[in-house]
Image (cartoon, rainbow, N blue to C red; front, side, top):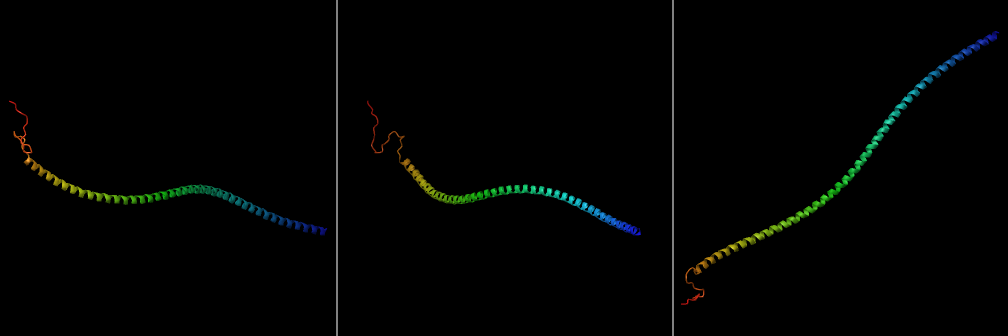
Length: 172
């Protein structure tokens, strides 16, 4: 019996030691499970926060894509405007060339008109001088005519041939 009693005591001691170890192991795993649950909760919160950030980034990307589309449209319009400006610049250059040509022609025509005006003034002065001479000659001739003309107021007038002309006849 004493052997059985010692065996019982040893078994009880082994069981007591084993149960203490199992309790320690159970406590360790409970603590470890709580710690892992806390980490999973933290990771879940982080994932939710990251999902919110991803959604915000997606909204920013959509906004930026919209802005890029508008900027591309504006760029296209600017390119069209630039091409129109280049076309207008070419037209302005052509118009300036034509204007310079017209200015040259106008300058030539003005020179011709001035030459004609000078020639006309010279001829006009010559004609005015001739007219003055002719008017002086006319005045001189008129003076000579008025002195050489017979007076037609006298009762007897001579014809230019110097003969007497009888006008009408008297019967008695």
